Amino acid sequence: MNRDKGEKIQTLSRKEVLEMLSEKRDLHGIDMRKANLVKMDFSNCDMRETNLAYANLKDSSFKGADLRDASLWNANLEGTDFTDANLEGADLDYSKLRGACLLRANIRRATLPTELIPREDIMRSVELGCKVGQRG
Image (cartoon, rainbow, N blue to C red; front, side):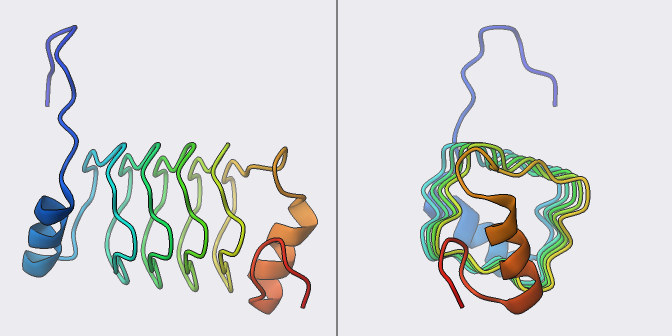
């Protein structure tokens, strides 16, 4: 989709995203930056190359979702469930990951917010399923 320079990007509304999810689980390449998507269920969705930068995804579920090369830059991912998600090559830099679960998630080549959360906490969540930033 070509955009003229200076054209304002239209953020999808929560209702529009819910309508898309009711029709299909393919959100490949969709631009959802800055969208308010709290407590949404994206389980098993194809979200490759999706732009979720600055989105509020608090307490959402991405169980089994394919997020390869997606942008989650500066997104609110607090309490989000990424169990079995494929985050290979995804950009999570500056994202808020506290309380998120990354059990068995593929984070190969992903850019992680290691300035905000120690890499060990993220790896512990991938291996043990504990919430990021919490011991256990």
